[in-house]
Image (cartoon, rainbow, N blue to C red):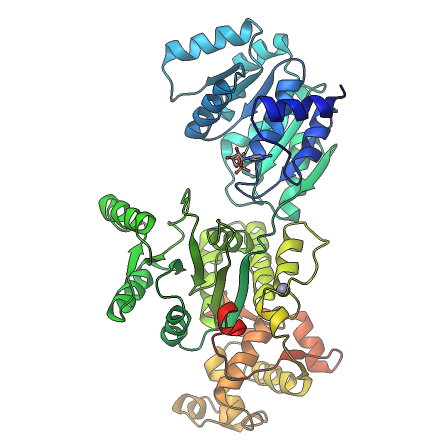
Length: 521
Ligand code: ADP
Ligand code: ZN
């Protein structure tokens, strides 16, 4: 039998599965051949099997590094039940149990040893392992090793020394969340880039994707929920205060909405979560505190009332819908206020300039997704490294392709108004200049004397708001958080102003809520 046939029979006999899922075989094959691999697959795609099977088939000991004690216990128990010799050493177990497992490892009977990173990377442990010569190291939740990703853990940092200490061992990393920059950073830290990165299984074709500008969230939310009465869903909000407000708003309108956020007592949260899990037709109005480990298969929609934190966060949050494979909707409304808030979060989050710069770029990617002029799924998948996707037919852009209009003249009016007023005012004030509104502030600043005053008055304020949002999302204008959120021009903005570059925008109609079901009716 070649090694893949052996792997196949372990899959059938030890695990009781008929066949590999997409992506699994490729990873198993590489690890069996002794090739270093970084595997990026979403939660639930079946990552564990990808290293457990090679660990069973290969000679010698495999060490699996995992940050979560509960996860280690579950996996070890499941493997033991399948007749695999496994050991597990961590601080969540009694000393005697750890010692017993350790003896088994030294006796050479154990195929897989689960360890926390801080246990593994002690000199004492490494010295003993030098003699045992583990054949393979697997790092689960590998994104924790990178400062560029979300969720860096200091105790993962030392894992970058593994490759030098065990040059003959195969090293595998597994993660569900890592963009291109983070991936190459992880591959570099784990195996000096000498290995393959495999990305697979991010498509969730049953989830309809849609994003529209925020006009009046109450109307937009009600319109969306109206056609979904009786269904379970999640409404994600950016703040605790807003979750409370939205939950009571829904209840006042005859929809069972329950709040969920980290500021509530444990009992209240627990209770709301249990209701959501057991009852139908509950809308959970939540901050990102809600979702980890939620295993409810019939969540029919996820509604984002605010911009999510990143593409990764967005993907994870919408991924909670439609686990049963039946049609589900992911709908987002977003506006300029969201962009501003997110930028502020980033500024306050850290003092490291490099980190901030990356976070702002991450946000730019998300904004480009919001203002997409091509299939959203194609954008989403290519963000996660799956680049061969074709237009899906199950997103708002595919179903209703936006008309692009040459707005170079309008853009020049806008950019010029921003420059002439000193690049320090926010959208409202700029709109007042463009539409020629003689407000007190405009007069007192003398902005009614600007040559751009009133040049844009053939368009409504609503038009200009949407236009500015697109200009910001497209990176022509920048919200300058350091200067009270005033707008300033970017390099490409200057090119447009000079007439060296065109500016196209998505046709601005009266923005309305659309959806998969509204559309297919
Ligand atoms: P991940 O670590 O990627 O989140 P898991 O390894 O926990 O995912 O696997 C998710 C589920 O899929 C588990 O219940 C696992 O038993 C199941 N699974 C994995 N591979 C297969 C397969 N080839 N066939 C059927 N079920 C599988
Ligand atoms: Zn599409």
